[in-house]
Image: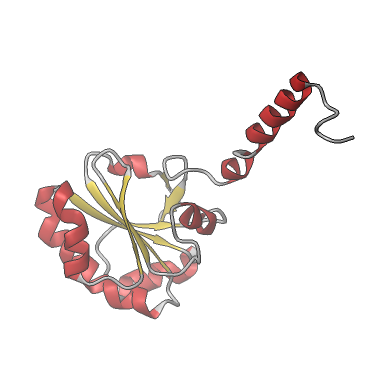
Length: 166
Protein backbone atom coordinates (compact mmCIF):
# COMPACT_ATOMS: atom_id res chain seq x y z
CA UNK A 1 0.00 0.00 0.00
CA UNK A 2 1.43 3.41 -0.91
CA UNK A 3 0.54 6.80 0.47
CA UNK A 4 -1.47 7.39 -2.70
CA UNK A 5 -3.74 4.50 -1.72
CA UNK A 6 -4.61 6.04 1.65
CA UNK A 7 -7.66 8.26 1.86
CA UNK A 8 -6.88 11.91 2.71
CA UNK A 9 -8.27 11.53 6.27
CA UNK A 10 -5.90 8.63 6.96
CA UNK A 11 -2.95 10.62 5.61
CA UNK A 12 -3.76 13.49 7.95
CA UNK A 13 -4.09 11.13 10.90
CA UNK A 14 -0.78 9.45 10.06
CA UNK A 15 0.96 12.83 9.71
CA UNK A 16 -0.51 14.04 13.00
CA UNK A 17 0.65 10.90 14.82
CA UNK A 18 4.11 11.16 13.31
CA UNK A 19 4.47 14.80 14.33
CA UNK A 20 3.10 14.06 17.80
CA UNK A 21 5.69 11.30 18.28
CA UNK A 22 8.66 13.57 17.52
CA UNK A 23 8.68 15.41 20.87
CA UNK A 24 8.72 12.12 22.81
CA UNK A 25 12.51 11.95 22.59
CA UNK A 26 12.72 15.42 24.10
CA UNK A 27 10.46 14.35 26.97
CA UNK A 28 12.98 11.70 28.01
CA UNK A 29 15.32 14.45 29.23
CA UNK A 30 13.84 16.91 31.71
CA UNK A 31 14.24 20.60 30.91
CA UNK A 32 16.57 22.66 33.06
CA UNK A 33 13.57 23.89 35.07
CA UNK A 34 12.41 20.30 35.66
CA UNK A 35 15.84 18.93 36.53
CA UNK A 36 16.49 18.02 40.11
CA UNK A 37 19.92 17.98 41.67
CA UNK A 38 21.06 17.37 45.23
CA UNK A 39 23.43 19.42 47.32
CA UNK A 40 26.28 17.87 49.28
CA UNK A 41 23.87 17.28 52.18
CA UNK A 42 21.58 15.21 49.91
CA UNK A 43 18.94 17.96 49.91
CA UNK A 44 17.04 18.26 46.59
CA UNK A 45 17.63 21.50 44.70
CA UNK A 46 16.31 22.90 41.43
CA UNK A 47 17.49 25.92 39.50
CA UNK A 48 14.31 27.69 40.62
CA UNK A 49 16.11 28.24 43.94
CA UNK A 50 18.26 30.83 42.14
CA UNK A 51 15.51 32.78 40.38
CA UNK A 52 15.92 36.50 40.91
CA UNK A 53 19.68 36.20 40.50
CA UNK A 54 21.86 36.03 37.43
CA UNK A 55 23.20 32.51 37.79
CA UNK A 56 26.41 31.04 36.45
CA UNK A 57 25.69 27.30 36.26
CA UNK A 58 28.99 25.51 35.78
CA UNK A 59 29.04 21.78 34.94
CA UNK A 60 32.29 20.12 35.96
CA UNK A 61 33.98 16.94 37.24
CA UNK A 62 36.83 16.25 39.65
CA UNK A 63 38.85 14.53 36.90
CA UNK A 64 38.57 17.55 34.54
CA UNK A 65 41.77 19.64 34.53
CA UNK A 66 40.26 22.77 32.92
CA UNK A 67 37.39 22.60 35.43
CA UNK A 68 39.85 22.64 38.30
CA UNK A 69 41.77 25.53 36.75
CA UNK A 70 38.72 27.81 36.45
CA UNK A 71 37.37 27.22 39.96
CA UNK A 72 39.48 29.89 41.72
CA UNK A 73 38.26 32.42 39.14
CA UNK A 74 34.64 31.35 39.77
CA UNK A 75 35.19 31.78 43.53
CA UNK A 76 36.57 35.29 42.96
CA UNK A 77 33.86 36.27 40.50
CA UNK A 78 31.17 35.21 42.94
CA UNK A 79 32.66 37.49 45.62
CA UNK A 80 33.12 40.33 43.18
CA UNK A 81 29.59 40.25 41.72
CA UNK A 82 27.46 38.99 44.63
CA UNK A 83 26.25 42.50 45.43
CA UNK A 84 24.99 42.78 41.81
CA UNK A 85 22.82 39.69 42.25
CA UNK A 86 25.12 37.10 40.67
CA UNK A 87 25.35 33.56 41.99
CA UNK A 88 27.77 30.87 40.87
CA UNK A 89 26.59 27.27 41.16
CA UNK A 90 28.66 24.22 40.31
CA UNK A 91 27.06 20.99 39.09
CA UNK A 92 29.42 18.07 39.60
CA UNK A 93 29.24 15.06 37.33
CA UNK A 94 30.75 12.84 40.01
CA UNK A 95 29.59 11.09 43.14
CA UNK A 96 29.47 12.76 46.53
CA UNK A 97 32.39 10.73 47.89
CA UNK A 98 34.69 12.28 45.28
CA UNK A 99 33.19 15.76 45.26
CA UNK A 100 33.02 16.65 48.97
CA UNK A 101 36.77 16.32 49.71
CA UNK A 102 37.60 17.98 46.38
CA UNK A 103 35.44 21.01 47.26
CA UNK A 104 37.17 21.30 50.64
CA UNK A 105 40.63 20.90 49.14
CA UNK A 106 40.06 23.66 46.57
CA UNK A 107 38.20 25.85 49.08
CA UNK A 108 35.21 26.29 46.77
CA UNK A 109 32.81 28.76 48.36
CA UNK A 110 29.94 28.67 45.88
CA UNK A 111 27.09 26.13 46.09
CA UNK A 112 27.88 22.71 44.66
CA UNK A 113 25.15 20.44 43.36
CA UNK A 114 25.47 16.84 42.30
CA UNK A 115 24.35 15.81 38.85
CA UNK A 116 22.57 12.55 38.22
CA UNK A 117 22.08 10.03 35.42
CA UNK A 118 20.15 12.61 33.37
CA UNK A 119 22.67 15.46 33.68
CA UNK A 120 24.76 14.57 30.63
CA UNK A 121 21.60 14.37 28.50
CA UNK A 122 20.47 17.68 30.00
CA UNK A 123 23.74 19.33 29.00
CA UNK A 124 23.40 17.97 25.47
CA UNK A 125 19.83 19.27 25.23
CA UNK A 126 21.13 22.69 26.31
CA UNK A 127 23.66 22.91 23.49
CA UNK A 128 26.63 20.85 24.66
CA UNK A 129 26.36 18.21 21.92
CA UNK A 130 29.70 16.54 22.74
CA UNK A 131 29.18 16.44 26.50
CA UNK A 132 32.53 18.17 27.06
CA UNK A 133 33.51 19.79 30.33
CA UNK A 134 33.59 22.39 31.65
CA UNK A 135 30.29 23.65 30.32
CA UNK A 136 28.73 26.83 31.68
CA UNK A 137 25.30 28.39 31.39
CA UNK A 138 24.39 31.94 32.28
CA UNK A 139 20.80 32.08 33.48
CA UNK A 140 18.96 35.38 33.55
CA UNK A 141 17.04 36.50 36.62
CA UNK A 142 14.02 34.48 35.43
CA UNK A 143 16.05 31.27 35.24
CA UNK A 144 16.16 31.19 31.43
CA UNK A 145 19.36 30.29 29.58
CA UNK A 146 20.92 33.55 28.41
CA UNK A 147 24.33 32.23 27.30
CA UNK A 148 26.17 28.94 26.87
CA UNK A 149 29.93 28.74 27.22
CA UNK A 150 31.92 25.65 26.33
CA UNK A 151 35.41 25.00 27.63
CA UNK A 152 37.59 26.63 30.24
CA UNK A 153 36.50 30.16 31.10
CA UNK A 154 38.53 33.19 31.86
CA UNK A 155 37.11 36.07 33.86
CA UNK A 156 36.83 38.45 30.90
CA UNK A 157 34.87 35.97 28.78
CA UNK A 158 32.47 35.22 31.62
CA UNK A 159 31.99 38.87 32.57
CA UNK A 160 31.21 39.69 28.92
CA UNK A 161 28.49 37.02 28.98
CA UNK A 162 27.10 38.41 32.25
CA UNK A 163 27.23 42.18 31.73
CA UNK A 164 23.92 42.74 29.97
CA UNK A 165 22.05 40.84 32.72
CA UNK A 166 23.47 42.74 35.70
